[in-house]
Amino acid sequence: MPTNPVFTPVDGAGNVIGGSAATPAVTKQFRDSVATTQASGSPTAPASGTAIATVTIPAAGLYEITAMYFLSGTVAGGDANNVQLRQNATTRLTPLPLPAVANAYPPPVVVVLNCTGSDTVSLNAVAGGTASAVYNATLVARQVG
Image (cartoon, rainbow, N blue to C red; front, top):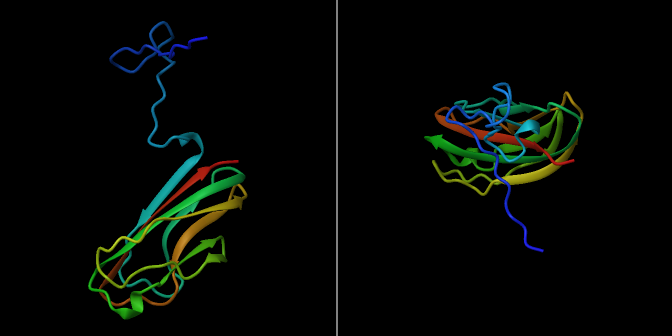
């Protein structure tokens, strides 16, 4: 039996045609935006344990955490692998691979964590960063269960 795609017609303002004005078409940045949150940060020379980026989990469940990070500015050998992933105060992964090269992008780290509705997930400096090194990070938390 052949199937045909279903399209929801919308007007120029994004409202569903045939629906009320209070029924806008839903467009989101992420596939599962209802349960997705993200945060970014770029501190210079973070102290030991300082959060680089932190997301607060909106509801209890399993979350796929995607961590993207890199160094910029003037970096030194001590900045290599100087990032860890924490859930609340508990270290989950340490150290994360991070080359001591400015603007070199390691592959994103993806993990699944069981979270409560008020958990925080963060990327933190393991030790103090070099004085002119900028630690750049983005965390995306997407509920998957």
